[in-house]
Length: 120
Image 1: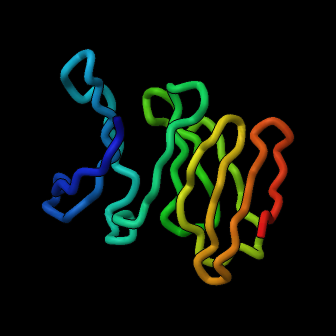
Image 2: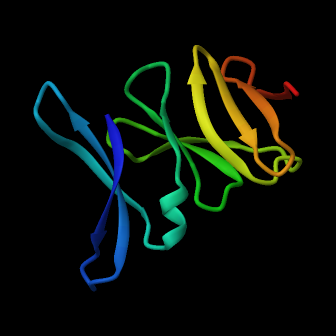
């Protein structure tokens, strides 16, 4: 499972740490501070189909970051300019679903074809 934990950084500023917890191991197996701003509270994550990588909506809302098992950047998916206020993502099979809150529209990204499509 993955979740965010608010922790102070070495200088005492609040930061948000993405943590992957292994139920089998009974401990956190990977951690990464993605940003030290309050924006990170709105980060959304979803597991990729491989079950090892995580998809994270970046704090600026302009891209999805693919994070490998060690939570290091393994790729990125840029959002179309027409998406103004992304929310989500949700991964279903080889598709990523994302809602644009400003237009209440649903978008789909095909991981296989590397293409965005507006569903409604």
